[in-house]
Image (tube, rainbow, N blue to C red; front, side, top):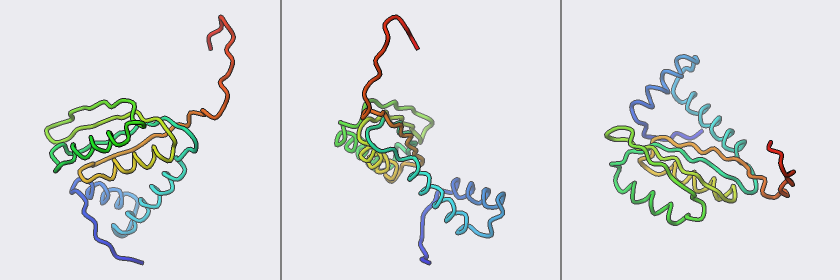
Length: 146
């Protein structure tokens, strides 16, 4: 087993400690290992193959050093994946962005993971939905709406 050092915001650590106590964990290491395993398992299960659309949601500290600039550069470097972005000012320190993405699921996942991993991004999640674009479109009957 390896020993590592991580930096966690006070609020997040308080949430982890509260969850550990509520679930009966003996220490922080045990719950952090379980949360990491669950996150890795979920990301593997959620990854569709082929083409997809996705919603990338993340909250970040708008004052974090060069973060806004890095985010814009990342989006410009992947303009083929990004369809539209909604930007919301949450409070004096935090902004939320919701971005619609479309493309090959591996590329979308890699891009979303990269955005979420940027220093200053406090929370992030991506929801990926397969488009089934490998299938033939269904023929519609005229005059009938489903």
